[in-house]
Image (tube, rainbow, N blue to C red; front, side, top):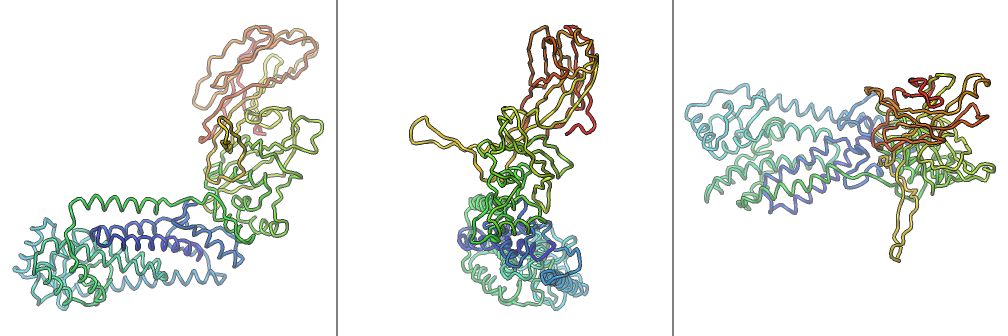
Length: 636
């Protein structure tokens, strides 16, 4: 947490979970044993340790939206991210919000200091300890042995209100000097020792310090300490009968004292006089739980913990009454995958929707999007008209740059009014997708460009679009292999009509901020260019070519012999192409061959070939074996 907004998001998330746990505990108060009542606080502890909003998730309620709305009221349109569940000040406060965060951090420090001083005072008291007499030591050892509990060091201290365990690494059992020991009190403390409750008391104090200004969490910390005591009470009561039960209650009343209440790393049995009354009530309601309740308790704990800890992802924005509030909703719906960012940006372009654009826009662009939406009620991506959303979109040449950045070419079908001489027009734009504050955002690298192409399926490559070029030359023939990748997300929605066997489908323009790519294609376009003298062209009557990509760590494959066909092209699933083509008189110097390709794994990065290997045949005779190397600037 680096600002007050991060703390607000964290403490609201924790509060929602705490409120649900309190309700569930009340419902199961008399049905599940005290051991479960204390263990359930561990779920809240896990949520406190997890950064709120991690991977775009929320617990019970979209707290990111609530924080975003509050920030927008104050004119702050930045993202809210919690990197760590502990506060960190990275720079001097400059605004009122910064000073509020500094005051919160100061409160955390003061609370931790208070607990540290309380613990040091307790240790100072324990330094005046003596060894207990043989009779007391024998009693304590007998109780520990009867319940198979490993005993720690025992000390006797004057002025203690009751016995307790202190310390985590080398705990000691402190007993009051000059007072008669009671086996039930000793047994209670030994159960604390067995369950390492001194450690849990420190953890509870730290959580209380982190959320010192949240009264609900402070209340939960008190409840957790009291449940820890009730758990040990239950262990003791299960070993008692009849009059001993009432005697145990009287002992608790006699020890009501706040001297060491809530000091960390100790298990003072009273836990403060104000909690004794509730513990007496628990003794009055005492009952032994059936053996099978342990399994039931675990099942209830898992059913409660799983949805709270995993949470849910905000997968769509909520339309609110005003532009700033709806944009706050958009910022609370982050893109958690690179594919989700590409998809959301493409949907924003299709609809010229500024809310969708805000979901995947960098922080520095949020104010501009707000101004444009307030002025026009839409966002302009730089297209005169609207791209055809029914044809979908494609990402060409997706390239991973490091661990948190991708580049790719967005390709859209653009039915123009200005496409006159071409059968098909497309709009293209280079995009950079990178991670900012835990979310993936999109930054255009240039304006949209418009290209006329031969009608074809954009899903399987396009020779008019750039790719990564590999080239080599032999026997006056330059061979180029242009490698392309195509990625997209399946946005097809199919609806069944009332009549049997009839259905309709359409492209959904609803963003998918958490999606992965569902289609990937890798293909090669082949171009042969004659570089010799025109006078020698007549000696070329037939061209044969076999090519295949070679990836790092693999060997050169054995290529297929093209044969002597008038025209034939074939390709295999591993990317090999075999071309056989008769060259008629007056053939041009450039021979473009469509090539082909194969599908790839959409969720894995498709790496570039290290090089292409090729066998060149002229007039059905093999004239060269060559390697086509990556051209400088080949990823055009």
